Length: 269
Image 1: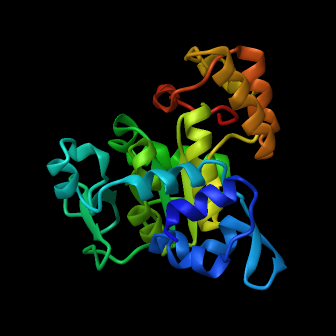
Image 2: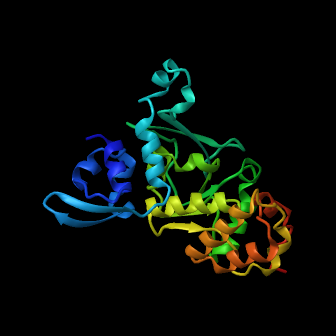
């Protein structure tokens, strides 16, 4: 039985051979399967399986249906049906000689980087903010109530959803704390939720302790009422009650570029 068959049975609520299912999972998911799935043994070699990450089964199903690599996908007429088997990440760290970020190269068999990872990593969703690591580190420190600088924190360009690719998530596992500075919207919350499910409690959402002073920065209108309501509900599920109320009160999302408009952080003199 292949991965698609396992997923179909899990969706239908049918018990499966869980150990066989785990063997078919991608390596990055397999290593964290105990965090991602709950199981109940119902018979010999049969378990009832529930997925704890709402979007993971969709990702796995799409993965199972894809060609094995970009070359095979190109032969079928569309190379974009398959993610690349190599990932590149841009990183600011303390040992850089100038303003150019380092490049990390990741494949299934190796991770190449020319620096020693710090205890923390700050993920920044957008290029404009990534290009200014110092104010973003200051904002994250203000939100988290702890000292952050390039001396103890590497800064990575997350690039939206691409950061949750299996190669990237596996690489992030070397950090003690993964700080997520994403847009304050449904997409940002979903990326954070996926990373936290896969990497655990060391993944933290960068947000102010009090949102009142930031409400004027919520200016991006959601694409639909449904997305706005989903963002409110997901924020509540994640325990971000203040953010959920801000979504509701303003009717808007906040793009992280607005952080760069803060000459002085709210609450500072």
